[in-house]
Image (cartoon, rainbow, N blue to C red; front, side, top):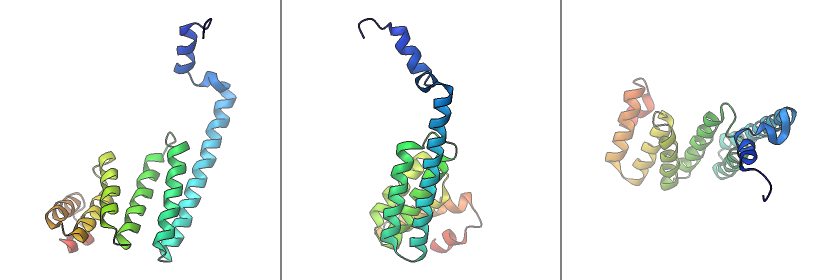
Length: 158
């Protein structure tokens, strides 16, 4: 640090390609894409557990795929969509296990990032019904119907 010019440091920070060079950056991106494929593979294993009604194991696998996604892949294209999908699936596991507070917490986190996610709104409404918070549930479900007028599940819950 004594004889490194501040402008040299800011240059490194401004252009991460200089850390690895063009080829190194491409290799890093390829590695991250491989990790994303692993995230999707684990998510599919969780889906299999869910279909088998093993909601606890499914939630554990979804949690693992989410952790990997958040550690390495959030900068990749489609990462937000994958993140929302995993979180929604985790909330559904919580609903199946009647863990209402967790379902509400997870779906609220999704809605903070994407207020128009109707799956999260619907699932939060279901969680609120489970907790007996019927007015709050009604608001969520009405918003779902407003965004998706043909959503028969939300209409039925109302």
